[in-house]
Length: 457
Image (cartoon, rainbow, N blue to C red; front, top):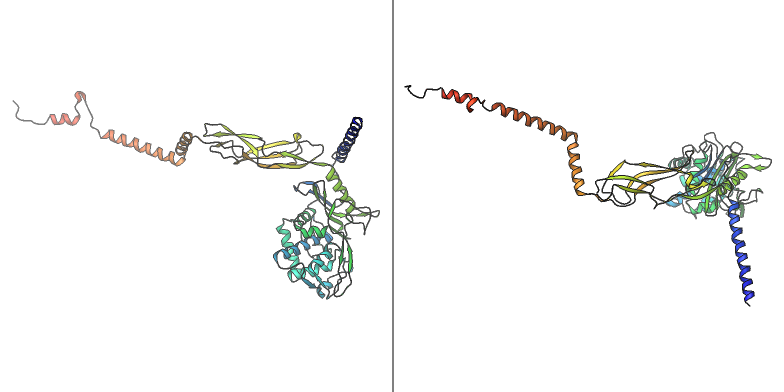
């Protein structure tokens, strides 16, 4: 019996050891040596979803046509209109003749007919899943009364979000020389839109069935994003992709803004102006490569700890201590290339003053810390706060106030004027006193003594 128990324990130990070893090996194998990459596109961007840290930027501020990625802004404005009460998801909208007339022959479409009735929610699925241009025009009229007014709101919202290289002409992305944006601005727009749960749902939908309407039978739409679904194109599936929107015109090339989640991390990517080479659509293949590189070449590392003192500053007017320790205002965790260790980074301390006067309260801001590498890449900045209270000496404070009072230029001038007046007063007083001669008699006394005091004998 004992031999069987011992054998069972031994086998269990071997099994657990094998599992832990396999897990450790898998994690080590996933982490790759850091190497810079170049993306085959006119512009590209890769940003960490949690910290906003830019991992890759390639002509990220260049003005380029975005094609149907424009529809992220269109959807964002519709969601904001719903949030403000201007629209409701179940509002039924009738497709107008003016909206349908704006369709061009090369437009992507959901085959919506004039007079067809659909809800706002159904139209949004047509926009984000099928990439239907007419759905954009219909929603634009519902939100703003006209397409032109809606486009004006698009540009205003872009400006509010800090987009500096964006100008829209239409709500769907049809090519126009004055319709442009940048990879960075697309990231800003998408990040804002992702705050809405419905947007993340729309962006991550692989297949949508549009129910029958008053003019059409049911329709089934498949996402245009081949990272999530292989219905339109095969060979690009990426299991960690969660959206977001494709775009393509002959002038814009192949464009894609995407979002991926893996191992507790998330990444935003933007590719603009990619090409199709040998039947390979590089907006998909390059985005997939960027995601794989971003997840495997960086690791999350704490570079600043909230409780750890990193510097000190001199303190005056206190008898308890002559310095106070400083700590970062927050714990800062960043993504570092796999070949960079925290000890390889340098910390630059900037104090508000060379010394500070007591009293000092715990948490009082007294400086700034910057963490960067040898190339000057800044990974973190944080305020430096006092680690503890430092009481003041009342006597030293009083002496200091007196010294400060008399060091003031006006006080110095008044003191000098007062000294001069006192000196002049003393001089004047001395001049008015009678002169004295030998014998202790003054000149006037001698004159009085020479006066006649009676008949001489």
